[in-house]
Amino acid sequence: LVSRLAFSTALDLPQRAAAGAYTQSTMALSARLVVLALSLFPRQSAGFQPRSWVQSPNAPRTAPRVVRHVEIGESVRTRGDELSDGLRSELSSVVREIQHELSQRDLDDDTFQIVEGYPFQTYQKDGRAFPLVITPSASFDDSVPMDAWVAAHKETLLQLSLSHGAVLLRGFPVPDAEAFGRSCEGLDLAMTTMEGSAAPRTNIYKDIVFTSNEAPPSEKIPFHHEMAQTAHPPNYVLFFCETPAATGGETPIILSEEVAEYLEVNHPGLANDLETHGVKYQRTMPADDDPESPIGKGWRSTFNVQTEEELEMAIQGSGYESWEWQPNGDLKTVTVAQPSLAFDPRTGRTLFFNAVVAAYVGWEDSRNDPKKSVVLGNGVALDDAVMMDVDRFMTERRVAFPWEANDVLLIDNRVAMHSRNTFERPRRVLASLWGARAGRQPSIPYLNVRGGAGSADSADDVATDPYAELVLRSGDRMPTVGLGLWKVPNDATADTVVNALKLGYRHLDCACDYGNEAEVGEGIKRAIAEGVIGSRGDIWVTSKLWNTYHAAEHVPMAMEKSLEDLGLDYVDLYLIHF
Image (cartoon, rainbow, N blue to C red; front, side, top):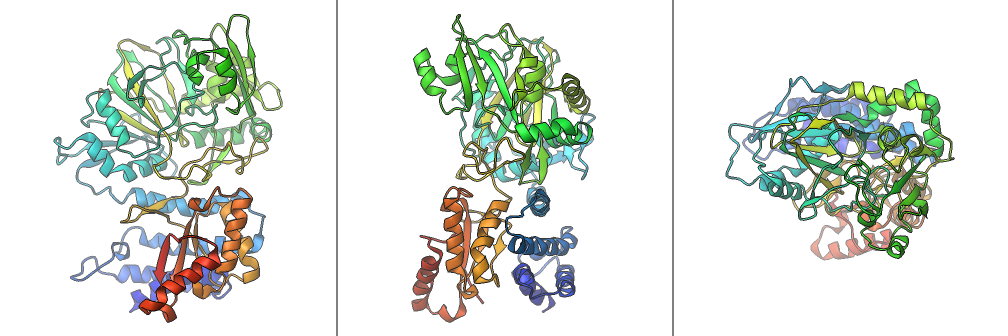
């Protein structure tokens, strides 16, 4: 009885509290009741027992998280457009906790094990290993194709890459490039283009597996987010070690948030400049690929064209401010101002999302001077001493593990940066670049730009996965955090919906009985018109069937009424209201 009452209360707690129906003391009491219920529930039961109700290590965190979400909901309703980074960060921290719990759901799988204690591993402030290392367990079935195993564990792997930044799969049966490519396909990610990439590469398998940067072994490649200087960088980067180097050849990694934090604490002037102006990248490309240069990809292969006329058609609208032909057929390009510090709504962290250091210390060949390869968006040169200090910090904090044959490294390209050490041949490390999870809407904001160089509403913003989601039995993905609209006054509902979507909510919890679905629909319509979301498909809308319409003949008319009020053709979830 206590359990049933507690969870009935918890379901409506955020909405009721936001509407002022609960006092802080009542809220705290209800939250404690939830924890009590969790502690009372037995671990085993002969009858039906929802897994999420079983006592678990997460139970003590549930109550304070509910209370924090209540407070956030109240802020969205009352503070209007005053949506600060602090409020976004607070919401994201709630989501981050949920994401971490989601990433742990399948860790009791008996086919793999997490291994810690490698000398190269570091640990984040919350104790998570970087990188996370996964190896097959004794019960791993070698007869199961690796791509099938990846497909069965794709949600876990992608969540872990978000939580930890990078996941190293070591000791799994990935013998060659084809097996690596099929394994990548098992993650069910969207294809991505390599347009704008500076690195010369060779296609190895089905246009999804390529050689990594083919620059000479003596060339060190500095830290960068893959293709961050382009309009559409990949969401995920995977590397496969076919042949380790004789010496060197590591692929060092570092968490982007660490670099952003160091910059803001030690060089706030540059951090402010990057926020205010962004940066422009300047690069001169040869006509054809130059294998002796780390940035030697020619303009023909970069834009998949053959003639200068085709290039001038292809480059328009590709994120370039200007381009200029050189007498020898080279092409000098300058990008539009691009943001360099970004807020990741999935994690609530600030990222040093750019290729600034890579360009400043590494874009050097016969055509390019690295010190001139990147400038502030207003044309002012970067401070050399500051840039060298940031490069030094990244070198000191990097994680450089020795490659082993058949290793696969999965990187969330927003969370972690990578580089390449010099090496002695032989070495063969392949790469595969991928976009968002299949079926995601590309207009859902992934990175919220900080500062004046761009905005979250910009059409050129990077887009990918929204907040943590639950995969339902139907295969649909439901955002785990939603905005409850019970007791929101009718005259405030539309504004509340628009502000919530600006903040990053992608799940609206409505009901016929709430009496404000028409205003919810107005808010959705406004959000689309104002560019806050791209389309109806970017959000999840739940509605409910009130108990006076539970008779079979009444259900269709109730559904039609909700759809009419919401102004929608469908809802994503239709619940039976009590």
